[in-house]
Amino acid sequence: MSPRRPLLSLTGVSKRYATGTLALDGIDLTIMPGDFIALLGPSGCGKSTLLRLIAGLTAPSGGTMEWPMAMHDAAGDVERDIGFVFQEPTLMPWASVIRNVALPLELAGMKRRDAEERAAEWIARVDLKGFEKAYPRALSGGMRMRVSIARALVTRPRILLMDEPFAALDEITRFRLNNDLVQLWAQERFTVIFVTHSVFESVYLAERIVVMAPRPGRIAEEVRITAPTERGEEFRTSPEYAAQCRTVSLALSAAMGGAHE
Amino acid sequence: MSENADAAPAAGGFMESTLLRILAPTLLALLFLGGWEMMVRVREIPPYILPGPIAIWQTLLRDWGSLSVSLLITLKITFMALSVAAILGLVLAVLFAQSRIIELSLFPFAVILQVTPIVAIAPLIIIWVDDIAISLLICAWIVAFFPILSNTTVGLNSADHNLKDLFKLYRASRWQVLTRLLLPSALPYFLAGLRISGGLALIGAIVAEFVAGTGGSASGLAYRILEAGYQLQIPRMFAALVLVSTTGIAIFLALSLLTHLLLRHWHESAMGRGDRR
Image (cartoon, rainbow over all chains, first blue to last red; front, side):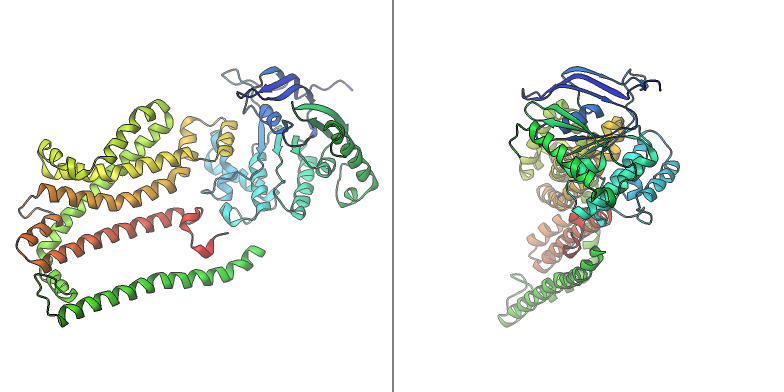
């Protein structure tokens, strides 16, 4: 097999805020197309900052970020081709579900009719068929998050960035959304970078778990997860799952200096 | 779904509160008017001191011909002032949102305009501007302008920062950010400002006319009040006052209805109490 080109490689990337705080230091990370990576760590380890760097919402203070396969736009900037799911659903409350999902397409200049047509497809794919005309306030937290995911995927991005998207949801809803996300990923094979502070969630979802340590934020260890492609309740209750949760959990406590055994 | 389950008792509560909201003040008003009429009759107070509600109502009907002409003039000034205040307030707030320098240099002057008592500068404006209608319009506008400007400015600055990031991520143009994010975010604030300014525009128009004291057939309600006062036609004075108050209430209700229609799908402020989650 010929060596594949990475989607993105970060070398010695650091981020220092205007306040002087070093949020990230010496980050080396290579992201291959189709990866499902979980960034796992305690709060303050810079995992959200890393996500924002990859999204281009903030610029690194040092190091290099290379996008070997990306196109460049007229201004010479990398066309990142990203979908982003925030911790909150972050929907426009004044717009219906379909208007919310169609937004990224319309911002890119697509005609309203075509944009809504494609938005409707994605609304159906996240199991919200029939709610196209509903306003966000009429939806439950889990349904709002589904709208947010549909909006992130409607442009068919190469990379889906998710910043603790299910942290505010109840466990039953979170499990269902986890299952649906894994399924979408298995069908579409986009690259996912998923920030979480839950060991169980990271092992259930990801192929690669990047364990991060705080002050300054850095990568402590990477754990590869072996799991069937078709994950479900069977995997969640299997001894392999439990064993890998234990490995990741140990890696996490080692990263935090053994403080949380 | 659980949402529908808790909506049912909440809807009942909403009906009840609406009924109470209309019934309670109506009852109080009737009691007050009844007591007033009774006091006037029992103590035989002459109408040039205090007319009863029935006498005021009869005067209103009798003088409707001349009073309605004045009402129309006051309404015209109020609405023109409110429209100009709304458009200029909105345009200026958008300019402020686009450029910090414009905001910093202009905002203090808007504050000066707001804190200067209109009664004190109305005579100057009336002297400087030849056309009396235009000077009244300017006075009403000065009073009505600031709440819209300051509210809309706050609204434009209060857009969800995650949504701003989202627009940045999708490389939205300045225009797209303004029309699809900032303006909708500011709409509830703009409407709240408009509701305050509706009442203020009327007050501004009345105050300016009091100061101007213009006579003739083409004057507004304020002059009718002055005139009736000079002539000791107290029932007519009250009738004009009733029209001013009714106009104020009508403006408030109309703007409240507009707010409700525009925001009912999404904004907390436009929902009944029982409707909220």
